[in-house]
Image (cartoon, rainbow over all chains, first blue to last red; front, side, top):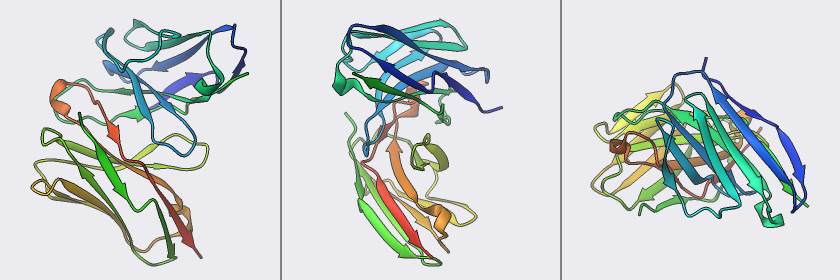
Length: 114
Length: 114
């Protein structure tokens, strides 16, 4: 099973709303990631969790708040977003190791901020 | 930090022709180079990857070559088919940290005409 499951698939939210994106994997991977992808652009790394600890924050605005409750789950809490935050948000996971392990992407959550 | 350049941005070929996409990277510490295919509205999917201790890797119609000295790597698709039409992203990472901080190229839109 190489599945990374993301919910919801589509989300429309107002600029004053609070919402969350959820991600789950059952591959035993200990590294989990959030990427943001705008139309016709490559994915951009936002956060990396390794062994449930935040290892990388790529200077992401505080209106995005990640959380890793356990080794299988990753959340992205959204608050006071701007219309320019509308994008595809991709969760991913990989084995923690030193051999260049494959990153598996979820199907993504399409976010529209109105 | 790492910077990955990718060319061409668009590539149109006839079915059965070969397609070549080229990437260069800047950080000599990068040692893992995956290629992702992304169809419209879908997640990036790994199609092939190569590690820095290997110069070439093949998987059926797809091959990747790596020149560490010149810091460039290429994707070769032979006998292209219409279903190969998609956006292709190269990426580079230093896998020694135990997780993948992938830096993506800007993408190549491949169109295969029947």
